[in-house]
Image (cartoon, rainbow, N blue to C red; front, side, top):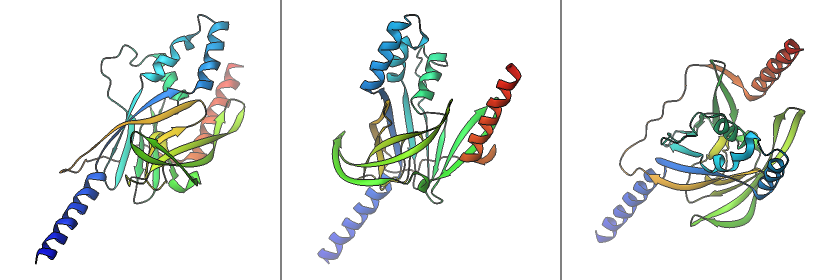
Length: 248
């Protein structure tokens, strides 16, 4: 009887721990890499009145929250706390340059990512799959915020002004937290992404809070035009070409 009672208590503890890990909020901050800061300092010396002068500080002031439950997660900018940078051009530029482009939703059942984008008042729900990232896992380990993290790499294609460019992405994830998501739309690893590096910017977990006794409700977006990431990029390129043609 004692053995059975102890086993029951262990099972209850494990179920409680599992529930706890699947409901909570992860808070992320951003910072620029040393290479980007050197590049920025060089530009500022050449152009002292450049709007990029305060970009480093603006990036360091950015905060984002990944809210998750067992089925869905959403990553978006944390609520403003009366910062003078709110809604400023500098802040919008900092968000875009550092990899954030709007609220991002993760469906753990379908393994689908949805980016909600507002383009001139038109809402687009841009979708891709977890598997699209094609991560390569390594055995390299690093301790970040007291969590044992493992290194993964992938190469993504970005749309630049001069065409498509390839970017190396490095992720550090922990298997201690079984949420297959992370900042800026990155997902598909065997645990929560603690840090993302893209060469110029680093997005890292600042803290995480678990909900022990309640489920966090997250509303998946329903209004908007559903479109694949490739089709959306092609559409944006067409808009840009049409605008350039009209200006000429």
